[in-house]
Structure formats: C-alpha cells, structure tokens
Image 1 (cartoon, rainbow, N blue to C red):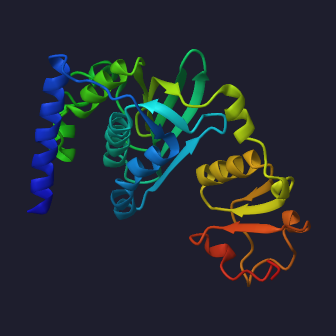
Image 2: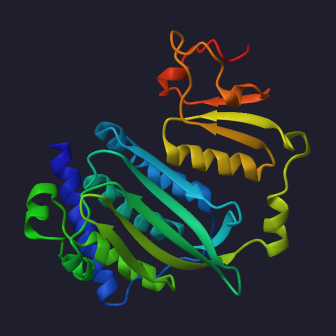
Length: 275
C-alpha cells in the first residue's frame, strides 16, 4: 500500500513539475548552499534502495570545486535524485557513482556532473529520444521497471534553466553515464578556494593506508586524503590470517593512520596491522 501511494505521489509531482516547465512557470531560487552537503543529502535519499539491491553508491567532488555556491539547491538535488535513481533502477550489480568537476570559474562557476552506473545500458538508436516526455528506452522498460518517463525530461529542462546542457553516453550491458553542466554563482573567490585546499600543518605528508575492495571508493578516499596534504597508499585487499606468511610490500613502511573498510574481509582482525 505504501509503495503504491509513494508511486502515485511521484507521478503527480512529476506531472506538476512538467506542467510548470512547459508553461514557463518554473523559477529557480538563488540562495546560498553547500554543494557537498546537497549531494550527500540527495544520495542519502537513495541509500536504502542501493543497500537493498546490494549496490555501491558514492559521490566524488573534485578538490578544486568550491563548497559554497548560490543557486537552487532543491532543484539540483531533484536532478541528482532523478538521474541517480534511474541508475539504481536499471542496475542489478556493481555501482552508481556521482562525480562533480570544475569546468570554469569565470564569471560564474560552471560545473560538470557525471552520474555513471554499471547497469543494462541503452541501445544507441534509443539514446536520442530518452529526454522526450513520456518516453523510456523501449516499451518493455516501462512494463518491467515502471516510471512515468518524465524524470529525464524534467531534469533536462531544469538543466537548461541552470544554463547548462545534458547528454548521455551508454554501452549496452556495460553501463550508462549521464552528464550535465550547470552554472552557479560562487560565494568564494578563486583565492579563497585555493586557500581551502592548503593542508592542515599536522596532516602534511602524514602516511595513511587505505584498504577498500571497491576501486571507486579507493580513488575517492585517496583523492580526499591527498587534498589534505596526506600521503595515502591504496590497497584493494590484504592477507588472510591463515594466508601468506610474508608481509605485503606496502606494509614494510610505517603508517600513522589506517582506513579499513568493514566489508573487506581479508583485513578483519588482520595480524599484519600494528596496534
């Protein structure tokens, strides 16, 4: 009952948003917001669905992207939820990752977003029309996965209102990446953004070992630590307690911090790690 009610509410909201966009009544707010917090909240809304399907869900914001922007955080969050939600819907194994990079800083901040998945992919012939209203890749998609076919259309219109563009790249049975750009006013100067990247003194060159069995998470964590001035070493797994008798090469050096993912069983209670 609750699922049906939520689905009906989503359909109604999609139709209302589509109607506003079509008659030119969709206005964007211009309020300060924190980009990373906005992305985190958007993905938090999808975390349960990702967990239920056994999928990894992550986001990465390049270090040079400013945190404090001015624009419509709610509509940006709506685009992310639409695109990442679609990615989760059409992905049965693997991951969904949202990435944000800087395109330009003057006169506004222009950002490039990428939402990638390891799902079923989209046939080349269908890619050109998926942003049309009430359209999905094919009829069987609607029957199997549901949906109004309005999510991508609304997202496309919102991206246009944000001064950007949206496009898709996909390979059948390998995955899909939706890209979009958007322009925002920045609450920080270029110098302030650069200053925020300077490492805290006591973190400078601090050796850190990061162990995660997911390559995307390793890359994200490594980049974050590197931006803080640390010296991360990345590893996908370690020795089992009853496995190798020799210490792995990367453990011949001393690490001050260890970042171990609980889902990486080879490192659970590993006797290779010092106290």
